[in-house]
Image 1 (cartoon, rainbow, N blue to C red):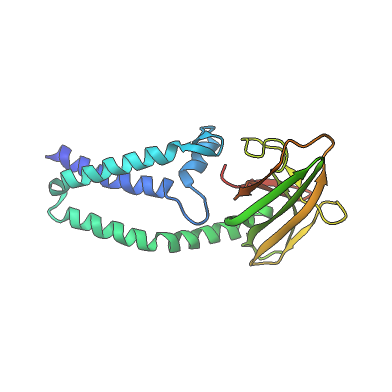
Image 2: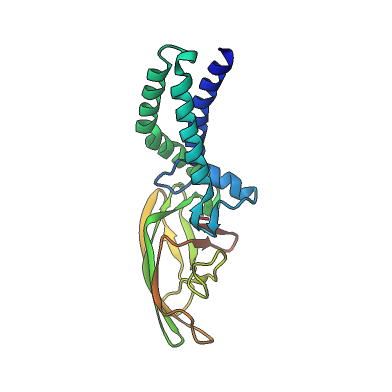
Length: 230
């Protein structure tokens, strides 16, 4: 009896832990993926695409947890099943607002360019190649959570093998073909229009295409930060 009770409670908490670690959200930040990546563990089968290992594992363990709650609910408490259902309904409702508040608080207290969020949804880059010229046109959405003005430059994975795990990044330029400096005011969100052309030293292997929510690099004189799916 005690063993079945422990299994029921363990199943309940396994669902909670898996949801906290691997639930997706509008910020594109998955805590479990972040922790595993820092440990050197690959969470995708092909760079930042393909089979999402942790997603499959989390979904499997959540289903096992649900099965455990259903099977052992009466061994924990006569109303344990109802409590679990109500708890998870409330959790689904408040998850994103609570996450937004915590995420915003953490980002606002980070130093330097770490307080800038790259908003992947709605960010995309289109590129075409004509002999040695690559023309880039697109938009990048960013949000500055800090109370300070931020000045920085941006690099995009427009070069050889843009979909590779470690692609070649190219600095966004202005009309004078110099690195374009971007400025963000405190607590602001911007939708940057990116439009420039670059000349390759050798014939480009790129023809045309687009990158949806590409990885980007934000940098200044003292730091460089890569943001995106990886």
